[in-house]
Image (cartoon, rainbow, N blue to C red; front, side, top):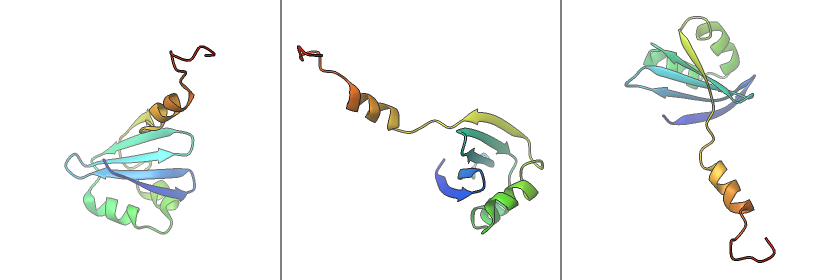
Length: 93
């Protein structure tokens, strides 16, 4: 699912799976909620809203069943490990 970065209230990213009709909302605390049964029209209005946080609170938060989860960073973990790993050939390591 492609995520759209946003900075609105506590929202940090939103994404939509057209085939499964699942809306993913990611928050500034690292949590995420997947809402099922969300129509394409609602996704379009939400993703283009100038007041995404208010739109979310008014039209999505308590209107659809949601499943909580955590945001999985993509690629950052390996990059940090590569940056801080020690070489086995380094006698000072």
